[in-house]
Length: 336
Ligand SMILES: [Zn+2]
Image 1: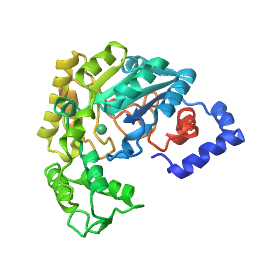
Image 2: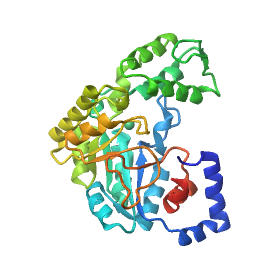
Image 3: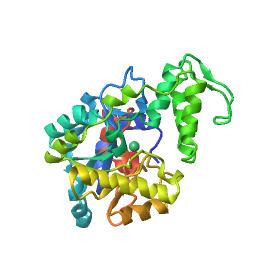
Image 4: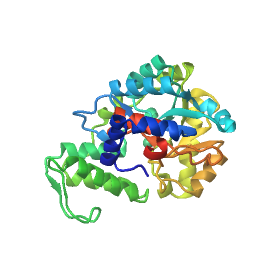
């Protein structure tokens, strides 16, 4: 687990200011593959959607890519096998989950400018029939509700106030409830929120400019970017029975191959924590020809210890400013 944000930020700054960071970096160099995970790039202010998804502003992302391009060997998905075989050196890989439009409009030009080959994990159903994902819809419901709290109810058990300054916390709490529900109850939960908070379901037009198109993805692929699967509908796979997991994985790969051709060998687990996938998920990945499964477990890959269906990735989230980013990439033993 990464150390808590406020402490992490203080420690990162202290290492910079005191010069201890420089000493530690020389005294305890890390070896392995540090895989960074992003979601959205751009300006989250004023968005009615889930602002947790923004990993960095354009300016910060540009600085981050500049920093890794200058200081590390940055590798793409195609290099991963070779790098793990080499068993020496420090490598950084960049990945994105979900397939948001800003991956093309904001991130891609910056990646190209720095010569960084990134891997994008696509939720194929969101591109095929543009849809607002559950986390964005729940955030939208809370932000547009005329009410100030959710009363006592069977889903959250205690009331959830969401007037300011409780709004962001309320969104996170309602998202946590969703992630724990069996797949059969998730739709009823979103309907319950839409009704109780008097917003109705979010308007479909929001989804129209939310995702990349297949043409954009083909262009990115021609220019050195790689692509993998992230299911069709972005369920928490472990909350589904084995046959439904299999369908999400099989159909996602089929659509990617139909649009991009083979090989499609990498997959990232929606949500990605330890309870988001299970043995059935692994079985399906292998059955359908996936070679790599990427998680959201934090840390980095140590040579000889990698689990190819549970590759560790370190999240770059909104709170990661440049001192933390420098600490994460140069001292991942402590910060990732
Ligand atoms: Zn995702």
